[in-house]
Length: 429
Image 1 (cartoon, rainbow, N blue to C red):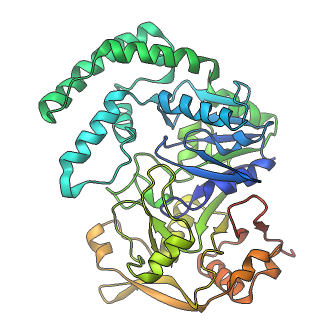
Image 2 (cartoon, rainbow, N blue to C red; image 1 turned 30 degrees about the vertical axis):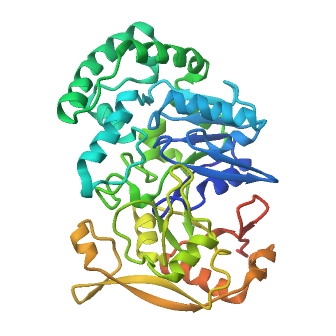
């Protein structure tokens, strides 16, 4: 059996939740390896809709092991709330189905307070964070003062680390940002209570995953956000605080890179992003608004309207190069149904030259002008397709061009939010 990664090849919101849920049927284990509850996945199964933030999408199957890896930052309050939410929808959550790494770092109340205060202090230069405390938690992780899950479930260690951290954090909160100090006893008592509820799910994830690999069980590694939000290769500083690339799997889950067999990149048939940051193909006109309305482009976690634009192959090819994509999944091609003309960015014009890469400098990126190819549109009949051959001819031309420009085969085309609205591309080889 193989181990494979499913990740976003754009700025997130590509439909990873649905595709992970669909592919999870073929996996024994589903693993989140980075990010936190700043990410949101929506999965529709039959007549029910599930909104997931921390828990892997495989949780909707009764026979899958779902793992939150050490690369994830965990807000215990959000985690327990999500467990209650899913159980309220009839989803069983047990220590056999859900495992949390003892090495994952814990989001504390001061992380969320500092997140909000720092963002406010940036003013016009704000990054557009979700305010969930993700960045400050990762900061503490690399500053080597973070509290991990293994610390959370040890009362004495939690007490010592919380006292030390809170003394310093309260100075930042009150003296630098003019905020109100947080109370030690309130936080300690609350997190001791969280620890008792979380403890049954806690294990050494690296050991478990390597045992699963030895037993030849298939593992699906589920990314959050998208490649262009990667801390190193994204549109810095308008990025998340973790590595969203396939390379993040090894450090975020505790397995060797040679254990991953496939890397599947999820790409919308157009492009969206939430919050601030550069967006070369953004449509700030009626077409952009039309795509937003047709695609219901509003954030699962924030509710914010997503910015919409044409498909940017330069971005996708960045994901192909950096994450080593072995196949593509194209989602929301049905959203474009009804447009007479559809464009695709195939390169950038930069200082009189044509480039096919994404510049690191935002100042350079601002000078880039998209170079477009135009395609004839297709109609609503796309929703009736059951196979690739049954897709409208113009839609197939569009998809074939994506393959030509990226050099990567499309393995799945999604024509709607439900599991059943998924076409696996069969090829004669």
